[in-house]
Amino acid sequence: MSETKAAAAKAGNMTATVRTAPERMCVICRCRFPKSTLTRYTLALQENLIIDSKKNRPGRGWYLCSDPGCAFKFAKYRPGKRRKGKEHV
Ligand SMILES: [Zn+2]
Image 1 (cartoon, rainbow, N blue to C red):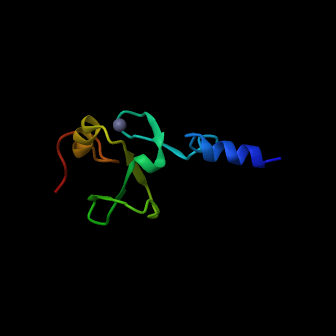
Image 2 (image 1 turned 90 degrees about the vertical axis):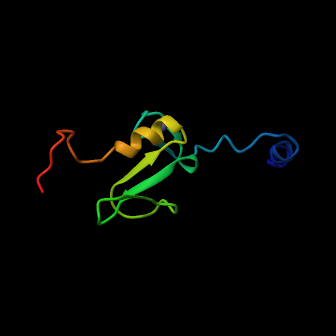
């Protein structure tokens, strides 16, 4: 009985949208996107944000969408730091 369904899926251009893909929120625009389309950054030891290409690094991660505007803002975005301007050296 599932044969017709499978055949229809094969024949049609329908992708498997029925399955709910994992979504994550872009830290800048706060829109939700499928996880696969986002770039994940994690905080490295040197406090530099690095791309977590495998999306499985431990610890806090930040997801960024493909919007250039978000990338631009994210360049100045530093998590956990207040924008007070001055830092103790
Ligand atoms: Zn975004």
